[in-house]
Length: 183
Image (cartoon, rainbow, N blue to C red; front, side, top):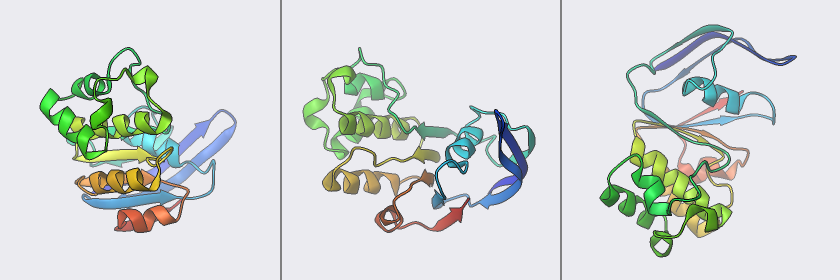
């Protein structure tokens, strides 16, 4: 269980969290929802230790391998799709994951030449190549058509724990969400 207790975060002049507490189960798919600007992305950044809270405690993440899919793909444009994923795993795993996301024709295409949806699928593959223990996903279906959303959802459902931020209520059904947390 990931336990967040009395979390306080201020970004600039905005108090994003004040004494916020929530428990996230050890496994399953957890959907974080709420209006824009409420702190969903901030919470993911805290869980993956990219942002230090002003106060409170977070327990249950220390011994877990955490991977992240950000809102915008963070790929190395000079590397191919396969090379971007293989940075965190072996080439066989990288190729298998990319193929599962309909990327078999783009394995050797430089990331800078990929479309937005293709880049998003490479980001998903790289996150799962790194770890499927805890995967934090911020709007993982951005730029994906229905077929590729389905493929991405299949992959996300293989995670031990997936914490997903989404504004689209249909994503909860697509992912077969186990728990919803409204911020």
